[in-house]
Figure 1 (cartoon, rainbow, N blue to C red):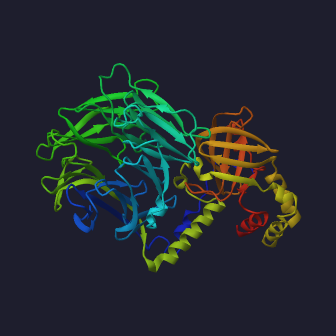
Figure 2: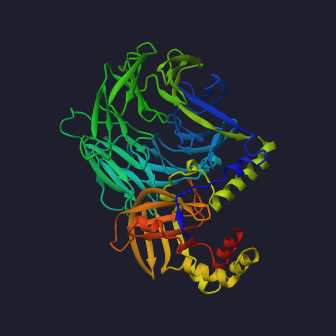
Figure 3: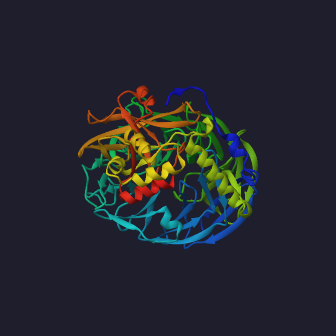
Length: 593
């Protein structure tokens, strides 16, 4: 096939389907989950209507944590020694060109994780780790299990009780290392263990370890000397130390929040400062922001990536421009809240719900709403008791009622079929992470040569323009390869060529849209070698008939050292299916397409 630059789409075909879009309704839903400072309850509020939806009783006052997906709220109840979960009732499904939203009633799922002194709670990769200080044990649960109301956890133990932390990181767990000389002091480092609990590598030093956060694919842990920055490594997480520079005043961060949309961390630094941290910067990684009075709470804006917010004890909410590194707007919202007294006294907390910033005011029993665009007051919501900790969940999407469900599914089927055939809009194409192709994959070329795929060729010939023999000859060229197996784990790809492995780490290099002579198109998702075996290809390009983030069920692969030349290759496309499939399974999968 000859490549050319003209574009062709089948958008009109999709829009022509009766009822395909007409029955879909654009829906926006935002919910606030508010924990009381003194009472064991969580109040759920419709943030758009300013109305209470429901109230759930807990065992003791709670600190709340939303899952990244927004489907779950975890309630850590330190006094009761338990973590329970609520289903937010809001779920999203990404369809590439749009997202669907399902809105149901919130509910307690029934999950209950018990232990002595639950403290740090961390999510990574859809797994949630609670560290129980009184036992020195981390209990880890998946989002799927918690949504199903299960309480099945896996436990990872440290050497002794401590005010510690654990992070489930792919096939490993990062565990805080206790201070053995002074057991009551903060941990002194991070130990990495594998699935069997065995230590991998050396303990990473991190004196006075306290505070962690994630931004994009980077995890950070706060130490007295700087940050430990954790990224995917070859076979195990890679940990490096990012030291505080000499020009910073004496101090340290003990709380970290990761940026969304922009990769950075926001941390406390002394009582009247915050620090912005760029984990990828070679110089000037730390920028200190002075505050007029002492800091009470801070949060990042997950929607407007440029901004974060800081509340100070003088009752003011401040907008922090993280690019400029300065406070750009301020507004007075509450009476003063002194930082003197107990660290856990009721003081305001911040959340972001769509176009509103929400601030709890526990002493006045209300939530203050601030318009994020104008940074002006936008009303308040009365909440019985002392509204304290708060999280917001929600967003916008398309909703389909039951009457239109079959039409909706038909529309998606037709739309996906057109995409599979190569007809789509440029705007539907989205970059994809390497994790879409994670797994163990087998070449189908041996099945073509040994006759296993002969029924597939005969099936194609029934409706095609070639004979079965001609189809086999065509795929002989297309499937041909001496790379019989590929494994993809994290950012590491291993090519098995005639039994010998070639391993390298790869990073996304974007995508390219190709238009073919007959008018249909394809997308190549491209990855570039970062380091690894010299003989491993500098580039490889996936083509799997998908155009936005979605798990691959099979794929065609192009590899070599010349990015541009690979884009011109359209005759040889080695094809891979999961290694778990038998030869018969592969044949059946092919005939299904």
